[in-house]
View (cartoon, rainbow, N blue to C red):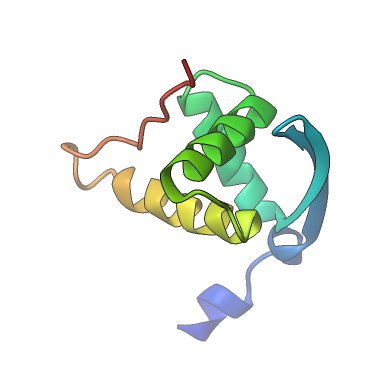
Length: 102
């Protein structure tokens, strides 16, 4: 069992920093490469660029919760939700939809 996890390509857990503009401010987000791959897929599934997806996600979380204390953690757990809801074994589930700010 552990070989499956321990034997993975080290490039998948290599940290990557990306600079993005969120809420009108430039910021840097560090996530492992595997998470960035998923976030790029999530953005594509929503028909938008990754920077736009991140900005809208942040704005919506801010609206719902009043603050976003750890955006990187929000992104990681969003990836988990995406994987769970995108499970090909359950056709009734669809990837979560992000509503564009009006």
